[in-house]
Length: 607
Image (cartoon, rainbow, N blue to C red; front, side):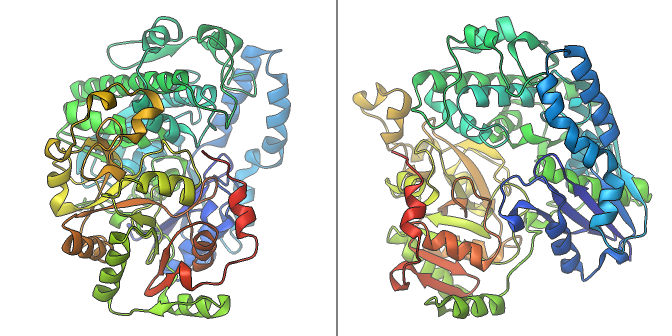
C-alpha cells in the first residue's frame, strides 16, 4: 500500500487530501473543523480526518506534496514590492512577518504538523496542482486543461493538455494580469468581501445590465481574440496596497466603493452584470483558442474562476468542446487534491486509468458521523428525535414535510469536499413554493434576499426541467429552465427593473428560477448518492416534482456544518423547521429553545 498526502495551506481555504494506491480516499477543508471560514492555517484537523478514513497514521505515509512552491511566490512578492516602491511599504510590512515566521519554512512546518512522518516532502506549482485536480480526477483519457484564478506563484491563467497520467501546461498569463483579481476587484468595489463575495456578484448580475462593459474594455482591460489580456494597473491597488481598486478606478466609475452592508443600488447591479459579461467573454475566447491549439474534444477546468458556473454553462453551450469536466473543489482547497494526485502519478511514476463518471465519487470525501454517534449526541443534547431506520419511510416523511412548506436541514453520510453542498450537508425546501427563496434567505441563511438557490434534480429527469442534456453532479453548470415551465409575465412585471425583479414568479419551480430564467443545477444519480436520490424521488412521488431546493447547511459567514453538533446549533439558531441527522428526524416544535438563539438571530439585520 502506498499513501500520498496533499496539502494546501497558509493562504486561504487550507485543505488535505489522501490518495492511497491511486484512489482518492478522503479530502476536506480545515474550515469545516475549526469553524473559521476560509481558514488558512495548517490543516491539522483535516489531515487527521483523512488519515482516520484510511485507518492510517502520519508515519504510514509514503509521500507528502505541498500544492505550490513558496519560494517562487516569495520571489513574486519581492519583485512586485520593488517594482512599486516606495508605494506598498505598508502592505510589505504587513506580509513579511508571516513569511519570515512560517511561509519560508514550510518543510519544517509540515514536519512539525505531521508528527511521526519521516518521508520526503515534494512541491508542485500552484497551477499544476489545479490542472492535476481537474484532469487526473476527470473521466477523460485525454483532454485540454484550463486553469483560471487570482494568482499562484506567477501564473494567473494557464492552459495545456492531459494525456493518460501526464499533465502538461503550455502557456500562461502572469501576474498582475488576472481574471480572478479583476473579478475580485469588482467584488470589492460593489461592497462584498473578496474571496467569498464573488458568488454574490455572479448572483446579482442578472438584476442589472452590462452598462459598464464598454468602459472596462476601453480603459481597464486590453482583451485579445485568443482570450489573453492586459490590465492597466493604474486602476488597481492590489499590487502595492491593502485594497483592490485605486482612486483612478473610482473616478472612472463615478465614486468610491459601496460601503459593505449598505443598500444595493442599480449601479452595483449593472457593475455585476458588466464584470460577469466580461468574465464570460474571456472564458469563451480562451476555450476557443485552446481548442484550436490542442484539437481536443474534452476540456477540464479548475482554479477559483472555474466556480463561475454561469461562465461554465456558456462554455459548454457555446464553446467548441464536446464535454467539459470541472473540479468540484476548483479553488485553493482543491489544490491539495491535485498535489496528492501529482504525487501518485508524476512523482511516484504510476499510470492511470480513467473511470466514468469520474474518480471523485460525488465529492463525498469528508468524514461521516454515523448513526451511533448521532444517537449519542441526541441523548447528550437532550434533543427530541425519532429514529427512522427504514430509509424509504424516512424519505417519505421528509417529502411530506417539504410538501407542507417546511424547511429541512439534511445531514448524513460523508461530507462534501468543495464549496457546494450536494445533499449530504444541505438545507432543503419545496421549489414550487413562491415564498421559499425569501424565507430561506432571510430566516434561515440570514443573507441578502436577491441570492438565488440551486435545484437538486433527479438525473433522469434533468431534461424535463432544464435546458441541459448532460449531468451536472457538482452544481457547476447554469442552464435555463425549460420554456414550457416558464410563466408569462404581465406588462407591469415586464417593466420591473433591479431588485423588483425578485418578486416575479417566473416558472412552476419559482424558488430555484433566477430572474433571467436560469438555475444552477445539481443532477442527482441513484448510484452516486442513493439516499439523496431516494428522498427526491419520494418528493416526486408525492408531488409530481422531481426537484428540491438545495442550499448549503450553514448561515452567512460560517462554514458548512460538519458534525451533528454543528447541524444542531444551526438548526436551533435559525427558523428551520426540521432536521435529519442520519436516520434521526427532529422537529423544531418538539425542541426546547436554546439560550442565546434570539440574540444570535438579531445580529443579522437584513430586509
